[in-house]
Structures are given as structure tokens and as C-alpha cells.
Image (cartoon, rainbow, N blue to C red; front, top):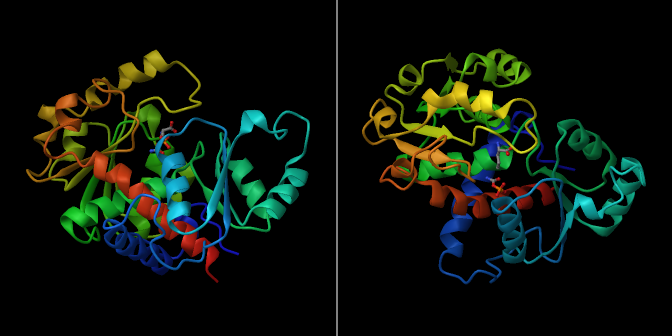
Length: 308
Ligand code: CP
Ligand code: NVA
């Protein structure tokens, strides 16, 4: 059984295959309607259950439409409507029921550990739809968006700018697995996970850390960013935003990157905080293509999970 939990847990060759499949399916689907089944897939007549502990627009839409286009069906549940987590039912018992009703599960959860626990209990594949520690599906669409515009990401220079959050952790893992150079530009207090950085170092990752965004962005091919405050972030958000002020992606900061650098954002964005409208709506921004690519990425991930 194949779970899609983190990029570090999947082989480089499988990740390359998933990426190629996402690109191939995008080319095929572009000529079809939104709910037309594109072609054969391992998801035909299968059911995807999605469980959300936090809000979502892109992940929910893209997984739902992906499953329909693959010939399967979906059920979406919000954790508020479930017994799990309220002391009414254990993870073990919930996992048994979920396994019997569905063929594949996507889970967006607060605690990464809950995802890992569930993966050991389910008898069907599990996909990480975002946790406090990672967001691997997002990075797949980001790498895809980069490659559509600029060719292979291998050896390219990318900067992550802002908070060293869950998506930053997945960016570090992506840098190792897809072999690109990653400049992490974050305040000292908001580094990515030490465990993930150590893993990258032990796996020949080319990761450099900068606390001056101008230096970190210098000469890069791509700038990636995200909100400064993530869902479920605890602590003094005012203080955090203040420490991130000089990391705002604006027209001036963009001039330090290569002239033809692309700009990506996980979305949703807090305009005029981490990015100005002039940049997110500007010529270098590919954020809407990046969001659409979630659909094609999800299809390839689902198909990979359900194949033997
Ligand atoms: N980027 C992303 O995962 O967006 P949603 O929170 O809308 O799913
Ligand atoms: N880092 C953000 C990503 C949202 C898709 C969060 O976790 O809220």
C-alpha cells in the first residue's frame, strides 16, 4: 500500500513519475470539460474520502474534481461533524470504519502525528492534505509550474521567502528530491523544522539559510512565498508579522532576483502583507497556474497511490 505522506518518504524516481504523469494528464484534460473522465486510471469506480480539520479552497476543489475526472467519487467530511477528536471514538475505531467505506483517504490535520498514526491504522492509501509540518501536494504543483515555464528544476536556484512554516519544510524536501538549490530567507526565529533541515543535510541537500532577503533572493530563478501566519499558528502574531516586514515581496525586492524569475505563492494570500498586489498580479507571477496545477498533481498522486 502506498501512502503520500511526505516527499522525503517517496523515492526520487516515483516523484519524477508522478510529476510527468501530472504534466501528461494536464495536456490531455485541457481539451475536455471539467467533469469529463479523461482516460483510464486506477481510481475508476473508487471512492476518495476527504477529511478536513482546517479550511481549504484549492485542496478541496482540486481533489474533488481530480477524482471525478479519474472516474471515481468523493465524500468530504469536516472533522467538526465527526466523533474523532471529541473523546467519542478512538482513532483506531475510526480508521476501521474509514477503511471499509473508502478506497483512498486525504486528510488535512493540525497535528502531523495524527496523520502518521492514521497511516498505520488504515488499510487504504492516505494522502497528506496539509499538516502543521508539511504540505507535499503543494510542492508537487510548484515544481510542475516551475518546469512548465523554465524547464527542469534540477540545478535551478529557488528562494523561499517569509515564514519557515509547513510549506517551507516541504520546499526543503522538494529541493533534495528534485535536486534544486534552495535559499531559505526567514527571520532567525522562524526557521523551518530542524529535523527536516538535518534530513536535507544528510541527503546532500543544497539548502542555504539567509536572514537578509535581498541576499537570499539575489540571482534566483524563482521566489516562493506563503502567508506569514498559518492556520493554527499560536503565539504573538503581531510580533511575528513585525519581524517579517522586511521579507515582503514587493517590486523592489523582486529586482534582486533574475530578470525573468517567476513568482509563486501557496495561496491564500494576504495582499500587502507578505506580497504586494503589484507582484502577485504582475508579469512574473504564475500563482493562478500554480493553483490550477494542484488539480493535475492530485490526479497523478491519487493514481500513484492506487497503482500496485
Ligand atoms: N494552497 C492550498 O492548499 O490552499 P487551500 O488551503 O485553499 O487548500
Ligand atoms: N502555511 C499555510 C498554508 C495554507 C495552504 C497554512 O498552513 O495555513
